[in-house]
Length: 396
Image (tube, rainbow, N blue to C red):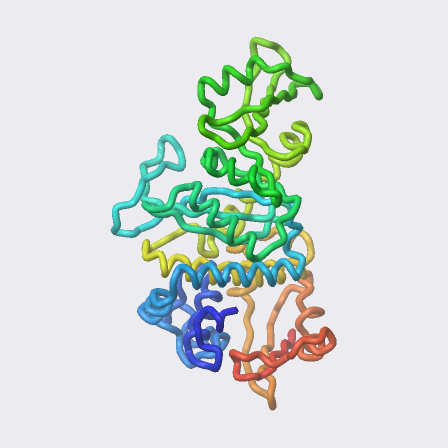
């Protein structure tokens, strides 16, 4: 995938520079440079390079690759992840994610909290499997891209990579639009659920509905509704909380499809918070900062970071509980940057001797005699970016 993205299928340095970006992301660093850190520690060897790349080399590499190349990389990665079982594919969460940026361009400013100062932000739109918590990918908003356009663009990317039959999309209020609802209604592949804007007319309407009480403090109701000039109707759901009429609170939702309102509001919608967990746990891999608004660079760097996240997800599956729930930053500090090791070459194999690795992590059983384990799984043990050397680990 990296070679396809770089455009160097028959060797070259660009793919190896891209590997450094991926490893930067796994370490939760904005960049690993010789003058800053990891000098003479083998970081460059890991990426098949005799040097650690400079800021300019990384900038030039990303700048020459287009937005479309970043999207293709996301699609190819999603196809691979789907084949590995990273997705269940029945419930997808959509979320607009704003990233603080230090770009000098004129940018929209937002507050994360009412008392915080406004900060310039890069608007992104992510999609994530709300059952496994694993991301599909993203698009980026700009002055020429609305929330609706970005959402439809993301859906088209997903359609080209994944089977979306019988899929429910769980979105945010910001995604509400007549165009998007009509698009969903015309599709036989997926339905949508999202909170509706709390407009006076909508709130007045749902308060007058005939509610069915399911348990103490929770009741639901629904009716058909339609936007002006819209082609189709959708379900307007009302959620009522509280037992005393004087203390009732109401929330409006938009839904399509045939699932019962109780299942949608009590089971499906709460899973949307998986995407917030993703940003809290994995955000430091490259989705919490943006130094430039050059869209070629942003798409390239953030798309390559998705590869780092997918690889660390596979590693965390091998770790015992509670280590599987470590944040990306904790994983980087506790394993990637804190374990001592040395490198040597024996015949056609690079041997990494690991020192003082906690036995409770269980890494020995997965990585000792690695070439033999890979061959047993039908995998070629030769690593192409390390000039077809094999890799083995010893633990002392």
